[in-house]
Amino acid sequence: MIDRYSRRGFIAGLGTALMPVAVMAEAPLTSLRPQIRDEPIVGVVRLVEAANLRGEVAFAVADADTGTVLEAYGGDRGLPPASVGKALTALYALNVLGADYRFETALVAEGPIENGILNGDLVLVGGGDPLLDTDALATMAANLREAGITEVRGAFKIYDGALPYVFSIDPGQPDHLGYSPAISGISLNFNRVHFEWKKQGANYDVTMDARSTRYTPAVDMASMKVEGRNLPIYTYEPSARQDRWTVAKGALGSDGARWLPVRKPALYAGDVFRTLARSNGIVLGRTQVTRQMPNGTPLVIHQSDPLESILQGMLKYSTNLTAEMVGLAASRARGTRPQTLAESAAEMNRWATETYGVTGVAMVDHSGLGGDSRVAPEDLVVALLAAQKAGDLRPLLKKFTLADSQGRPVKDHPIRVNAKTGTLNFVSGLGGFITSPDGAELAFAIFTADIEHRATIPRAYRERPEGGRSWNNRSRKLQRALIERWGKLAGSS
Image 1 (cartoon, rainbow, N blue to C red):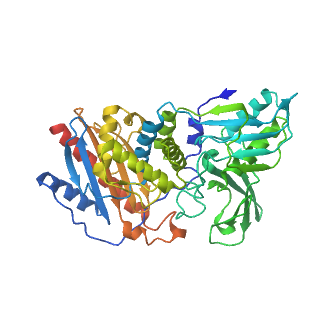
Image 2: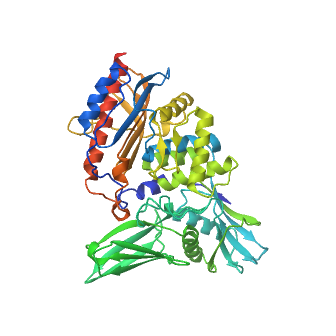
Image 3: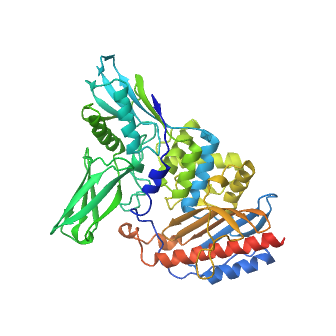
């Protein structure tokens, strides 16, 4: 039995309303010493100086039809791309796996079935689907009952060996940030658990659940304890079968909620599926995790949306987990067996060199969350130019809204932009495509970073470093100014 349905709405529901986003911080003033290549770059230097950004700036822009580089400012210098790196991951996955590729999650019977009774083990087999959610597991549980299963006399297992286990996408991030969860061959709800608190007199009622569009099952594998302190806001302690959290009572206020990362994805999926199976009259034993692929009879198969749709959601919502899982899947499809994100990213870097002839791509993961990744703007532009000719990437990129001098969005701006943004502490990026008012097509990449100051931020303060918003605003202002310049230059040529 195979089921398919779109979870685009679920992704939107897990948006940033409950999940803080990493922002920038102020850096010590350092002078920028641009390398001026030719006379037209002088106007660009003025824009960079006016932005008053502390750190490094590098960018490149090229004509999409001819491939001619129109302007480049430190364009061969590798800087952290942040989430702009997801554009490269999207190209990698499309090239290796194909736009129509679907991930599969299955329920497999290891043993004979007689009169609805499975005399053996039931295995939930993860296939690396980054969009698997509680609704999908609920459908699988219902389909298991429809397939005639009423009892499982063997063990209940979760197979998570389709991808390597990674404790955190970026271990340098604070433990509680939902955009840096664990990775394994099975993921549920982007490997995030929903923590909600409500004040009841002097105390708090707290819940941990795996909510999605239609269901809100409570979970046992994650626990939360409110403690009478002000700082730290969260602490995390792993145990054999549980993610154990504490939260500072002084930080809770009245009522609220947020998504916390899951560090035990297989146990999380197993916990939720057992609850959903029980609601269908099927009682399962304690979850056992296995890395050995089962050899049995598939009873239910859930297929993901096509990869092209998954990547469009990844680029729109900048979901780190999706980028890492599709990147790992692509690396494995190329015949490698990476055990870490860095090993898989190295395979993607090799692919970029083979495919585009570039040498300035040095990613350490597939999402751009790791600050040690480096990409040269000129090399990303080369990849974008190839993607433009193939028609692969631009339809998946969301529209980038330009603004007036007061920072207000301009509706129906004559310059049209489709791009991927990227933001880390003291890192900002933008890369994609420009259509000038007269229809000229450009490919561009802009990276700004203050790497030295970024390295001084203590781990506990990396969620919202002081002064970050103003640095980010100045970087975005420079990005808009450059796009306006290039749109006019292209239109006047």
